[in-house]
Image 1 (cartoon, rainbow, N blue to C red):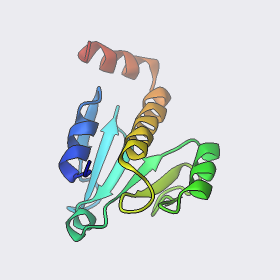
Image 2: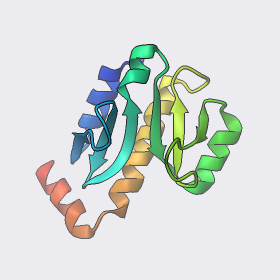
Image 3: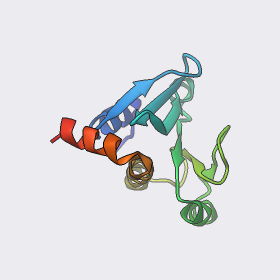
Image 4: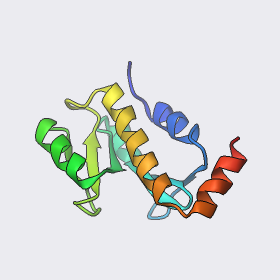
Length: 125
């Protein structure tokens, strides 16, 4: 299955409490949950055919993924400890990309206050 920008958009927007933003420039699409970023991508890179995602990741898992996949590197313009850049035209398949989006979302969601999590859960019950 080909992973398109529309696939990414739909997948992220289907998650509870997700909003989209362009806080840095007109190119960088940012998905947030509870006001915190969990996925960033460059629209220009999608147009050029070299899409990638910046995703939050547990530091230990981030190291393991970087060692196993050439398409997973320390986060571009992000904390290299907590973020990975995942190139979608490399050895990272569609299923792994979706799994890493889920993990990023879950990490950020779990870091929210109990009140914020309850509000999101309530809105999407």
